[in-house]
Image 1 (cartoon, rainbow, N blue to C red):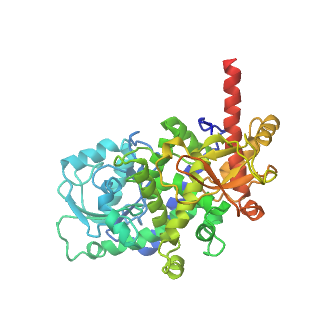
Image 2 (cartoon, one colour):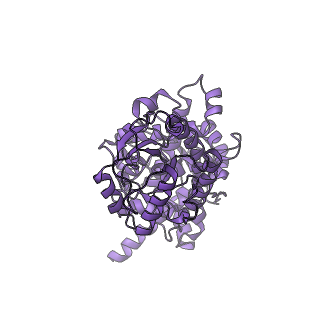
Image 3 (cartoon, helix red, strand yellow):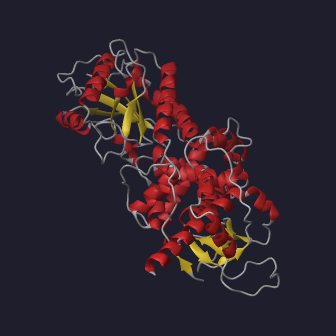
Length: 491
């Protein structure tokens, strides 16, 4: 079987709507926190977003935006200035370490000269620094000698803004969605009489659970999540994990992974290893309207370990987003969710980063219904040869002649832009259809990479996987077009 690896190609990257989506998410989260906290509460709530902001260093992972209610004395400040670097001072420490994420005791540290210098050095916008400190002074009742820096000598009691733990495995692995940080500032190391301090854990969990739903709704879109479990992409993921809705949801979760797990961009690492370069990986994100992580960090792991981490993280997110239904209906089948996510992920990875492969020649008694030698499909990338392939997937096989005929009539592949847009951020409803039908479906690959054909998947699969086929056609046509262009350049 001959495989030809080509870089990911799409003619026109989809413009990212993430800046507008991030603004709407911040507004929704701010409104919710205002309904929970009294304006004079001595609690600061910061929402993390891996986006750019004025004055942030290029190597910063993103920004922390103040979404707490503005106290008297600080309510005249322009909210657009209330942000800081995600690693400045003390407040961003929970975004850097998975070990702190499940800690349910406020971490108390003293603000020293180093933290004050870090805050001023990492936040390059002087107006934002002064506005932030003015609000914190009014909120916590301290006076800082510097208009643009925190009070040295005060104690900050802070926690990760993370939802409750729904499974023992998240406690063992320390992997839980983190959406920011929450803290209070006092002159005492243990302010036992301060209600905000004693209730900080409750605030952190309660606000984070709502913030997680707000983030998921804005990033993934209600057309994929739905107001109810029934009919949503999550239901499709559990019932039919290789269907269009399920695979689209998993692709969205892969691209949005670092919005929920800022301390370890594991999904980006998984995709990058297959594509082989930062540029190709950034192009993959951009083609679907997403942005890659601003800064990459995390422990060194082999492919199998990274895959296992990503699969577990997606399971954690789905559990949070549909906890009641999953807990009620899937408790008797503890492995059902993991199996479903594994199949959807196995289907999504060849779809996103798979190599173009031609069908090997073989003899069949059912020649009329069997793929012909030379027909095309997306095979698992060579970088994933060591992954466990016991999990099934769904990969369409498409006629070679049809792909090239389509390329002749649509050389710029513009008709397939909606196929990529469906997996973008926000409410990307709609399913692209194609007249080019698959020859057959593959349900798995042997250890050596040879495809295993499904004897059960026929018209019913086509009806629920038309988008998947359309996306695969676009990927195959893009690679065929790049191959043709390279041949012309060489001649």
